[in-house]
Every structure is written in C-alpha cells, then in structure tokens.
Image (cartoon, helix red, strand yellow):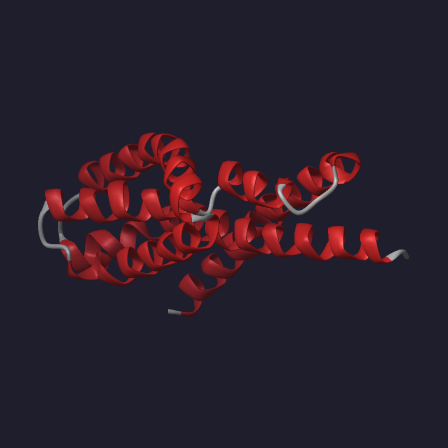
Length: 163
C-alpha cells in the first residue's frame, strides 16, 4: 500500500471512529427512556419530546458547527462537541424539570453530536485527502456512523440488561 493510500485510510478511519462514537452514543440514549423516567419522574411523553427536539437540533447544529469551524478550525469545534455530549449525558439523571431535560438532551447533547457529525467530519477530511480519494473516504466515514450504531446500541442494551 502506498504512503498516500495509507494516509487516506488512517484519516478516513479516524473520522469514521469519531462519527461512530458520536452517532452511536446519540442513538443509544433513547434506550434509557425508562431509566431516565425512573430517575427524574418527568414522564415518558416529556422525555420523548426531548428526544424529538434532539432530532431537530442535530440537523440545525451541523451547519452552525461548520460555520464556527470555518472561523476557528474543526479540532476545537469537535472537541467542544465531544465535551457537550459527555456533559449532557452525565447531567441527564440530575434533570428534575422538563425544561432541564429538553435542554440537556434536545439542545446540548444534540449540538454536541452535530459538532462531530458527518458534515463537519467530511469537510475536515476533504482538506487532507486528495480529490481522487474523497469518495472512498466518504464511504469510510459514513460506514463509521453505521458501525457506531451496530456496536454501541447493542452494548447499551447489554448494559441495561445487567442492571
């Protein structure tokens, strides 16, 4: 394998891993609706609303994250996104109101996931990968998101089963 092909693969796999974690965590969270309801007593409908807001905000956050990354660079935006996902996930059990839960799941977590979403990842890797290899890299990144769902969602369900 040539040096250029190896570098393309490494960059694409790294971006795919980031997308796998972001999408896998984001899509595994709804498995915990019952646990969230037990901890917060907010109710299934309100928790479901928070996840619905999350879907909307994930889509809105991606172009905003891209614009911020154009100004400050992709690395700080992605690091902030990872921190937002971690913080929101950690704080969910402490939410005692519908507003707090909606802000944590629907805004904070979704904006974090949007900041490490496919739009920003593809934009970032397109700067490092030659044009002839971008289709391959795009496939690897998108496969990373599917792999995150394939691994993290069953793992989350397994952890729930242990409890």
